[in-house]
Amino acid sequence: MTYDRLVCANCAAPVAQGRCPVCRANRERLQQEGPFAGLNPAALLALLVVLVAALALLAHQTA
Picture 1: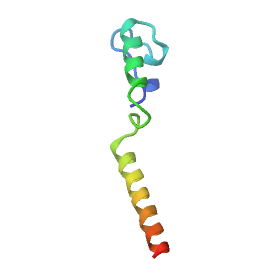
Picture 2: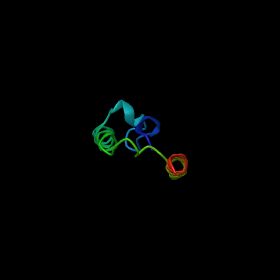
Picture 3: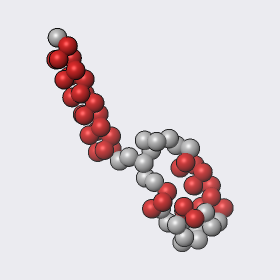
Picture 4: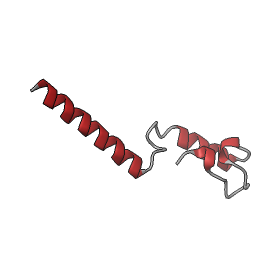
């Protein structure tokens, strides 16, 4: 989940604004998780299916 949609339970403000120490800490943690941390499992599965299909198509064309 991306932090731009999260609401802090401590100050009730969006985490992206970083109003309190809890918001700032969670914002830093979420930024360090990497580019695929915001994708849900269904999107990751769809990406995997597309990659496998592209590899199969490439293998079929070269054979």
